[in-house]
Length: 237
Image (cartoon, rainbow, N blue to C red; front, side, top):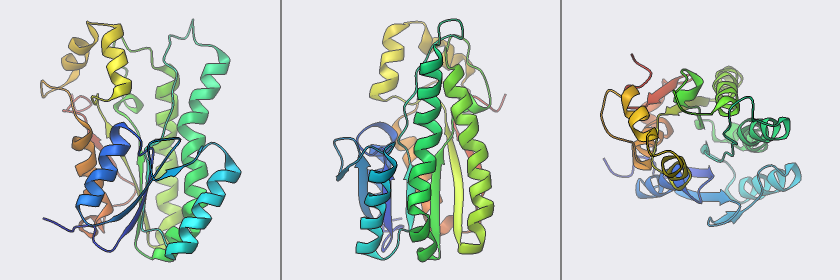
């Protein structure tokens, strides 16, 4: 199907690379007007952890278009280390980069999502919110993504009276520039990932992007408060 998102205004946070970039590209291909936001490499440069700058950006977008129909919160930052080596500063930075960044963008966009009347909010959890992957030093990341999962359920409840659907996607291991560093640092890590997967290959950003297209479209009009695993069956065992 083409033009599944025709006439919709989508803001994709984290559009400069990885999953966010894939979502922005597929949304545009499906007819949406897409505004990509990132620190660099996107339509709008913004530090989404700067409260004032984030509020100003969404106010400007909303005022120009009168509404925001889709918000994709793909921007995130995390430190990966084992608990004995993980500093408190890196723990706090990860929770800021995985929770605060979703809160600030969503709060800034909320009045414009309400103005849409049929808006879709898409957050990103992780398979790490549901299982521990042997060999992955992801304590802070697991905590952050578990928080996103809980936040999204609450936002689904708060948004329902205003026609806002809130859902999360829980990716398994997806090939991106960021995850390539994990593979390079530990040559045995890919085998550990595949040991959890039912499907014996790694995911690509488009595998997540197509799920986001569906959640953003009217095809998913009866779906809210859901967390959809796109993880090669890793969490289904």
